[in-house]
Length: 250
Length: 323
Image (cartoon, rainbow over all chains, first blue to last red; front, side, top):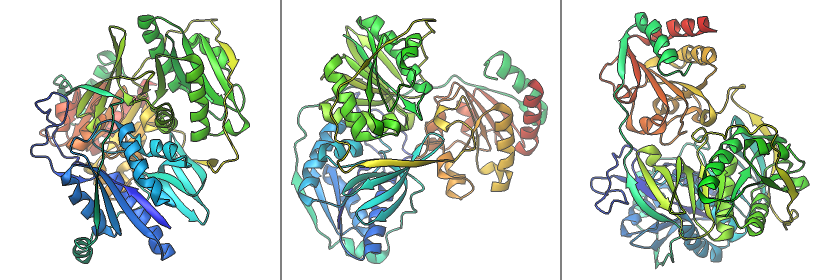
């Protein structure tokens, strides 16, 4: 079974966000770029299934500028077999345009499973996986915290408010991954060396007209300075008083 | 032009997040003119006429026996059919677990953009502008919609329900839609509860979170006792989740849950940037930490500096005395 994992290069979660001169995008100066943490879970789960079945191929796909190649190499170093780089120098913040480009690339591969992270920690949109399921006409399960392959189907547990839903999904299917699904492996030195020889196929893609327009990117207004109500347990009565009388939250 | 609102039900019960979406729809409809129309997918009517009190003028009801549980493809087919019938200016979803799965599917079917997890919506000369956090709240995008309808999902606990219009009833009309339930699908076969009756982190009014200052998983009982006294849900920092003290589902921050409760209590949490991103939109923040220089105090409304092992039990006792 061929499995596709769609991955995204994102700014590290320790990044201090600055707005670029255009007033609409993140200033990339000084940003460390990483493989989206939720996508690591997707890569790991695909690799585990390939290892369990002892057959098949894991293909990672990413859309973006030339720098995205380093993130594709990171997934190859974890153990993916090959990569497809959909090259576009001005990546759209528009999830539907991205989903259409990914779906077009995935369709001819006829995968048994298509994996995504549940969301990317940059735009937090959580849209592309579910959109690709619709565009490919495949069943999809988002926010999977447990996955069991059962031949022609899979049993998936997805996080919902206050618990989990158990879903039986027919394959081929699209799955998006949540923390707790697995512990992603670190690339071994051998894996990193092997990744250098694995193929990355480059294809230029156009994203078409925008479906959303970003008007501005703004930093949040800083919270008004708070105050220390006191030190130690002696300050508890004053804290309770301000929470009741000033903030009116208890 | 009307505003269409997706009405969420679970196990035949209407979910409170839909009243929040209806509340925002009432405000938008007042600015743009036009009715508020609900669309609900369910196996049986969960009491849709009562949504008149929450602001709905009309509800179109997609009834199917398979809709006793959530089905992404089936729900998306029904909502797309409702959009064709109603021709709304905008469609509002809740950014709940269900809404986050459904809204992008509907967007893909309709071929329009979706602004997800919005925290504010405004109208500018008859055009909608959505505000949404990115990088878990470190920055906010303002978004316009070149195509129609505009699709938005709204962050739970941010938008207020409309003032109840006592006695107002919504008209309920059956929706015709086509969906092949026999096609290969993702079928919900059961569910498990995990949090012992406490509300979900994303929907809780009060969240009490613990961090590494607790020194060990056994001391989380202090956090739980305070949470019980306040009727709160328990959260955790990434450090303690990574250390295996608490489950991933309790993590607050950029790679966990983003929360906006009315009260957030941070206990023994220093305030790493990725944690602050996940909770700094809370209405009121209380920090308890031994280090007066901890970054958490820069976002906290109220702080106590000192030994949490003395302060937290005293706070729990004081809260219990209030009730």
